Image 1 (cartoon, rainbow, N blue to C red):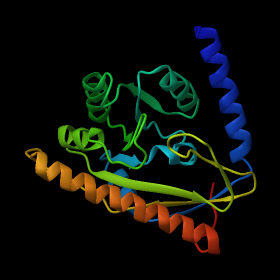
Image 2: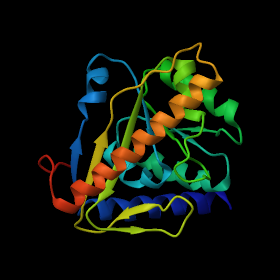
Image 3: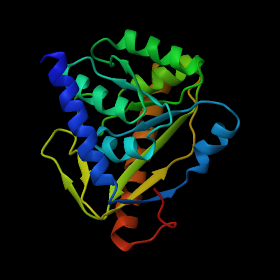
Image 4: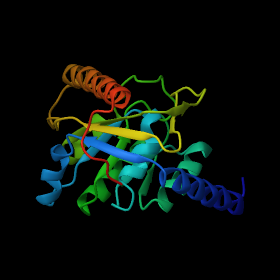
Length: 223
């Protein structure tokens, strides 16, 4: 696809998602887990399931977070949209251009940017925690902050990740977990155990968001 078409698709997607989220309310739980690092001037790495990308990008818009994005053509679409939302993009993944992507994340962390990695991206299997986020945390020394989302009403796309698109006028629930560190000398067995634990934590946070969205519990709504 030509540069002009990528640009046009990015602008259109940005306009449509901005209009959608203008009608959506957010309720958040556990954000102190990363705000304490922000107050101290220390970046973090947000880690999430790929299917929750849309509401979480909106939630953190304009904060300069740098996301690891695949070098596939699909990643070019994502890059154009998130750049309009005030994100940066480190191109690469654990399966294609991974080393290049990790180097870009490390550079961004040194400049003080928060990072984000989709734990099961870019192409799944869905909700299987891959090593990319752990390697980024191990190499940068930054804490991992698991985060999930759910909505009181949503479309779920027929894609590998069951991509979540909140419906207009819905309430989006966002839940943050406690920070987790990855020792710089962690061996393969330790990394596999951390991956299993963090995957389970993301599933737990996802279930919490779904339950809160269903019964209306949560803190007062915010943009």
